[in-house]
Length: 248
Ligand SMILES: [Zn+2]
Image (spheres, rainbow, N blue to C red):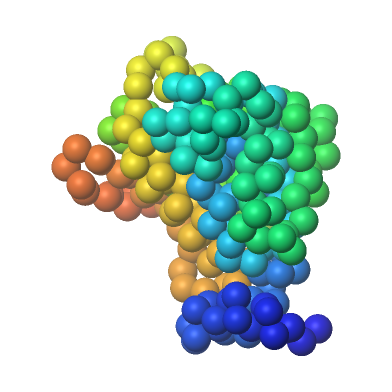
């Protein structure tokens, strides 16, 4: 389908890029992604994807907006306090990109819940959901875009173990729940670090959809907010991984 005049105007800066262009914008408009978590990572990530033309976004989050979220969850305002994060983020996305179809799930995503997206985005803050999402991504042969942030540190990676048996999955990186697993509620996190992770997740998702550049698949970017350094590390597949290893 040809782009409308409004779409040409809206997406001009993507159309001007040879790596995206008109065909890339068409791919973005046809894309469907599922974002689990509408907080500090899911919020800005979803905003960039909706603004960038992604046609359909599923949001999952059972939380309500709290005042302490506003330090980093810049998609929300004081008026949103006490309201559903999924609902308020959806409203923010629709205000920015009315053509984006947003499916709201005001529930904590569980393994049995179907995910409509062809790309799954892990923007959660707990290992139980991360492990379940990784397994679903692996078993359904979908790409998992994964991000995390705590204190001054962030990390972003992409897993595609279901599509290429040589590639690692999230559980190759994190075999089991760390004994010192901490939610950012308990330890603090710098707002812009969550923003860096969220925007890199959106960037990688746009690259995956359009085929632009080289994706972070099988690698991890580790952001050190205190020094400003970003380190890129290739991840190893764990042959004994319970999800993607020989026993998986
Ligand atoms: Zn694995």
